[in-house]
Length: 306
Image (cartoon, rainbow, N blue to C red; front, side, top):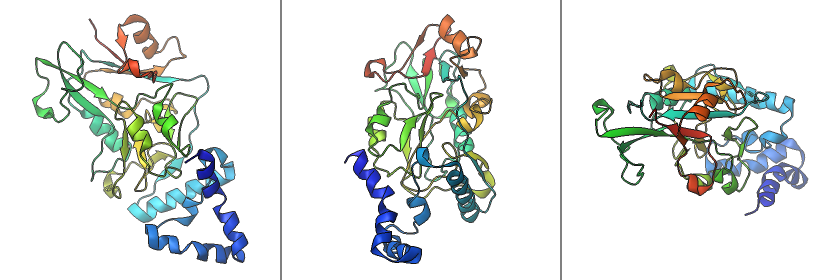
């Protein structure tokens, strides 16, 4: 299915329906059978234009609707913002495998910060327990007991979205629901995603998650500071992923996973800033990227102190 066909179907539906029936009331009445097919669908959200086509006024209305939806669903006041990329910025991450102890605190902090469904759980960060002396992903253990770490014959490799410069997930999306932002972050428009999961299959890092069921978020655990392209509560049936906590990093803060790391294994910053921590690591450490041979050109680096 081509992008043009999909976009014509969604963008022209209301216009064509208005020709077939008289008035707005008739249009909405013509859409009512959809509720019987797909459940409690939000018609306004379904007909929403692509993120890049929304005017400032339209985006204002969208944000207000999302806040009202969150209030109705979870009973809390959630602030949803459309936070734009910072100029002259390209974010990157580096992880010191020599000091990571596999505690998984990064994964738990990410889950909390990004309003990830608690049931079914689907953490964005997968921590692999690896045998020292190699990088064999086939034999890695990602179901180890975090209470038993660190083990002397093991090292630990957290894996999350690598925000690639040549992202295979973006190429695989048939409706342009995912793209790479100017600051290097690959994002998803949850209101445009059709849940085909092509991006999930294309990602060599298993960095995308799919909402098979309606997300469960306890009211008292919801992070109310959210962004449209980041950690706002998501609907069922869409793809999710790490966004380097863009609702934090675009406002000058660190990602939640970095702040919680007890060993200082994580390094984050702006590649365009010659004085940044990430530039220091790339210029002074022996770094490598995971699955370099697939050609995705990731902006997530690994290194050892020695």
